[in-house]
Structure formats: structure tokens, C-alpha cells
Length: 282
Image (tube, rainbow, N blue to C red):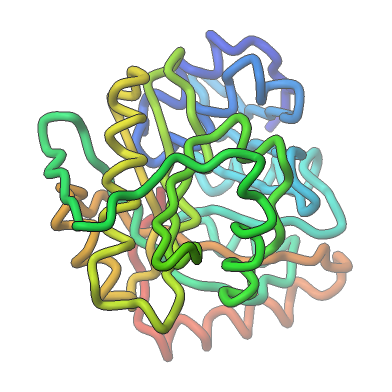
């Protein structure tokens, strides 16, 4: 198999649109604002077999995979080789990923999706307000409770963030990971409520405000990710009209030495027997 680096957004979109909702983040990365931070690799025979994306827009690179597992393996072996990366992949791609990387902090996620037709806005007496760079300090202070990375100013400037204050204190927020009206996609994330203020619908209200703005901007397909075991959050998102689309896996991978593959293969087989997971990925 031959790996080819591709830099034509139109060609890449044609590949990604085959699994548009799974690939929504990658489609958003085709936007001219984000595209310079990406590298794309494709394996082809008579048709495209597999695609790998390396996103370098954050401190930890992100790798996204799509397509045939043999093709994904080839891309990871030959072209996508950062020492450490954050992976987004289907369960069917885990053998390819774990062949090349030691995958830790692994978690199974739902990709949930929404359109303007399914959106059910919610509101609270306390109305969320649009956040700006001036709110960055308060936003990062809130996210410290979630043990999340601090936000950079550009993420708030280029994104859509809403927050809800009680007695002047920022207690809940929701924002975006990706926005591309050009390609009609938006990704909601960074939803968090101060533990002392949960149970009042604040997260739903902030998320609703973000979704409303994304729809007005022209994002026809809006997605978010939630851990498969976080049933409370899933219920909140379902109230807004989000629907489960597919499962996939996230995790931090560290590049392996080639000689370790035999032990990895044995460990992976045992791991799957315990978990009983055999489904496919985004």
C-alpha cells in the first residue's frame, strides 16, 4: 500500500463526507482558519481505503482515522508518527493504533448529533451571556475544577462561548471546539457546571445558547461527544434534541518500539475478552 499526503480540501471533503457526522471535526479542520495546522494522509487502491489526519493546533497533537483498518495501520506505520498524540478512532481501528502506540486514559464515547429540525431550545430564569476574551480569567478559573487545560484567548475569540452567572460568579459554561459555516459543521464542547450549582439546568441553558448561535451561523450539522457512561449528560443533551449517532474511542497514545507488537497483540486480545467490545468506530 502506498501512502499519499493530500493537501486539496475539496478532495479531502469528498472522502470525509462519506461518514460526515463521524468526521465532523475533521471536516471543520478543512476550514481555511484551521487547515494550516493539519496534515492529511490517504491510502488508495482502486478507491480510497483509509485516511489519517494529524491536527497540530493544540499542545498535544490529535490523530483522527477513517476507513479500512489495514490502510489505517499503514498510515500510522509510515506517515503519522508523532511521539505522543491524542487519538480519535473507531473500535475497529484499535488494533492498528495499539500496534504503533501504547494507548492510555482510553475512554469510549458517544458522538451525538443535532440539526435545526431536531433542536429543542431550553431556558432558565438566569439567562446565559455570550463570553469574550475579557471573561477568560473567570472561564479558566471555572475549568480548573474540571482539571481541564486552560483556554487560550484565540479559542474564545474564534469560538462561541456562553456562561451563566449567579451573584456575579461564573458557575456554568458551554462552548465550541469547531465552527465552520463554510462546511456546515459545528462541534459543541467545554460544557461544565460548578459542582455546587448543578441540578438547576444551567448546563442545558448554556449549551442551548451555543447551539442557537451555531444554527444562526449556518451550521447544519452540530455534534458533541459524551462518555458512554455519563448518562446524566446524555439525558441533558437529548432534551435539546441531540441523538446518539455512533460510538468511538479517545485516548492518549505514546509511540511504541516495533519489537513490542507481539506483547501488545496478546494484551489487546485479553482486554477485549474482558470487555466484550467488538463494535465499530466513527
